[in-house]
Image 1 (tube, helix red, strand yellow):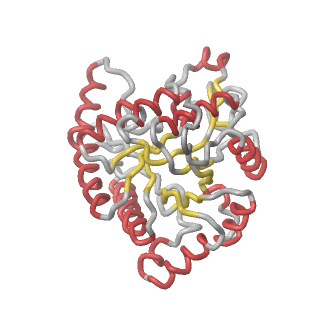
Image 2 (cartoon, one colour; image 1 turned 45 degrees about the vertical axis):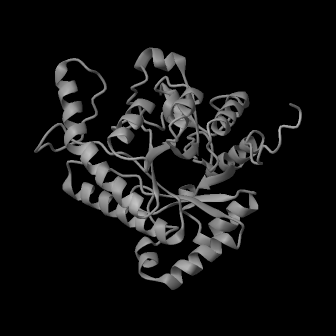
Image 3 (cartoon, one colour; image 1 turned 90 degrees about the vertical axis):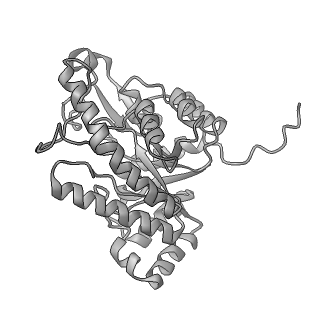
Length: 322
C-alpha cells in the first residue's frame, strides 16, 4: 500500500506548491478534487480534457515528484430532486471519468447520491427506519427508480473507460453501509465499489475491520480514506448517533471526526491496515483531514506520522519460516 492525501485540505496552495508539500512529507499519492464539493482548484478539469499538452504537463508535475494520483474526487448528489444540482453533479462525474481514463487514474471517488421521496419532490429524503411503512415505500421507490438505473448507466461508462467508481459509504446517502454497497454492486456491475472511510462506519456502529472483510471478499474496495472518529458516549446518551448538532460544536456532538489516532488508538489502525492487506487491497490510504480540533497542518502532520507507523507498504515476499 501507499500513503497519500486528499489534497482538498490544501486549497490555499497552488498546484505545484501542494505537490511539493505532499512530497516533502514523504507521501506517495495524491487524491485530487475534480468537481462537485471538492472543487477543481488543483485540477482544471475542462482545460485538461481539451488539451493533451496540458495533460502531459499536469501528469509530469506529479510523477517528477515521485507521486501518483490515487483517484479523482467529485463528491456531490447526482440523484438530487433539484435538477440543477443533479445535472451539475452528473456532468462533473462524467467529466471526471473521462479525464481519469485519459490520465491513467484508476478510480473516481464520489457519493451514491440521495433522491427525493417520489416524482415531483423538492428535497432529498434519507429513510433510516423501516416503519412507519411510508419510509420503506420511499426507500424502495428510490432504489428502483433512481439509484439502480443511474448507476447502471454510470457503471457501463466507467467500464468503457477502464475506470472504477468508488462510492463513499457516508450517512445521508443511499449507499452508506456494506449491505447497501453490495446490493447496488449486484444490481449494476463490478466497476462500482467502495471508497471505504472508517470514520463514517464507526458512528453507524460498524466495525471497519469487519467491513473490510465483507467488502474485500467481493473485491469491492476501490479506494480508502484514512480518517478517524471520536465517539462521545455522554453526548450519545443525549442525542443518539443520528446527531444534528453542528460539526463545529464538539462539546455537544455525539461524535466528530478526528485525525488518525485521536479517535481510536494505533492498534485499531494497525488492525485496519492488516485487514486491508489480508483481503487484497493494495492501493492507497488517502488521509482526509476534517478535524475540528486541529489546524490543517498539524492534523496533516500527525496523521502522516501515525499512519507511517502502521501502514504495510512492502510486498510480503517468501514466507521463509514455514
